[in-house]
Amino acid sequence: MKKLLLSTTICLLLATATAYAQQKWNLVTYNVSFKIKNAGIAVNGRFADLKTELIFSPDKLSTSKLSGTVEAITLKTGVNMRDKHIKDETYLDVEKNKLLEISSVKLYTKGAQYAGMFKVTIKGVTKEVEIPFDFLQLGDLADFNGTFTINRRDFNVGGGSMTMSDNLTVTIKVKAKMDK
Image (cartoon, rainbow, N blue to C red; front, side, top):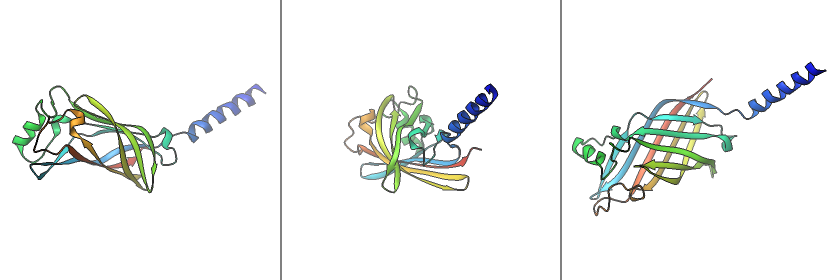
């Protein structure tokens, strides 16, 4: 009788763990880019070395988690002099603030898309930002794509520039493979 009870308990625990198990995704390719207007001209840039934790199942949003970091020093806009200026203390201050971070607090559906409240940390300042995103799975590959706008001044980036827009649009595109 004790063996039967023990076996049943183990089976129930395994079944429960399986029911709540999340799907882990491994990064395959990515693009983390931004766009901001400066003196009326669109400035585009990107970051490299994205590190992610992607634990996501569309039917288990309450226990899903999406997060990522990029190294601030990897910023590239295509103009070396501008890159150096953006990396200085007035903007990203890459000597003191090595990483730009994003981490989900809560994920949910919003219309035909997914969305979430994310903690975004730039230059040591953390703000919660709602970020809508698409998730498209084809077999063991999936795309996570999101675009959102933040106010750079909320993160103490760039001071009170009269020529630079306060609003910065960030786009994150990730292709990931199911971890088996």
